[in-house]
Image (tube, rainbow, N blue to C red):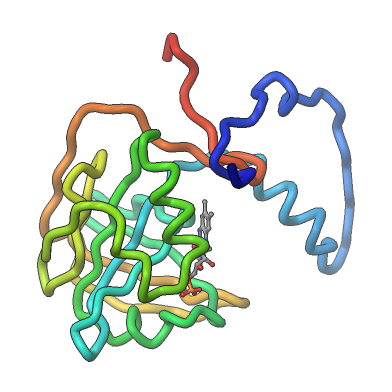
Amino acid sequence: MPKDLVWPDEAAAESSATVQVTAPEAPPVDVLRAAFGRYATGVTLVTCLDTRQQPCGLTVNSFSSLSLEPALVLWSLRLRSTQLEAFSAAPHFAVNVLRQEHLALSSQFAGRPAQERFAVGQWSAGLGGAPVLADALASFECALRGWHDEGDHRLFIGQVRRVAQSEGRPLLYHRGAYRRLSADD
Ligand SMILES: Cc1cc2nc3c(=O)[nH]c(=O)nc-3n(C[C@H](O)[C@H](O)[C@H](O)COP(=O)(O)O)c2cc1C
């Protein structure tokens, strides 16, 4: 079984050691990546239709709520992504929040070639045709408000036009591995 399909030993992931790096200029990338990874997130699949009406999507944990009034969300995409053009041109995108049962789906959307990703999961066409996952923990169907390049990523901002949610446990990501809430959470 691939390493990212098993739950890590949560006790082994705990560490009390403090590593401090002070860098007046750019911190080393590996140090920065490790520090960013201490910030636990949920996991989403962000989707759209490209200009040929083909579904596009990838696993994203940079998703964040931005504003309540108006209802805005944001996420960022690597500038080197094969899907940069598609998401920049699509008038709508959908953010599908994954549940812990979706670990394999998350791996599929992070690791498989773009044209194979939608072979797994139950999808329907949302606003502007952006694919919506039937059993997502929550989904946000958005109109693209705009995008902005910073560093090596493009930041997308969307206005939420339709929202859905249901009960369940989220898929989490922390220190480079998938996690789940403990039994008593
Ligand atoms: C948990 C997780 C979160 C990710 N979050 C992002 C993200 O926020 N932005 C991004 O550009 N890539 C992110 N990735 C990487 C993409 O899912 C992966 O590189 C994917 O293959 C990109 O599709 P592309 O090859 O068509 O660009 C994430 C991967 C994982 C496993």
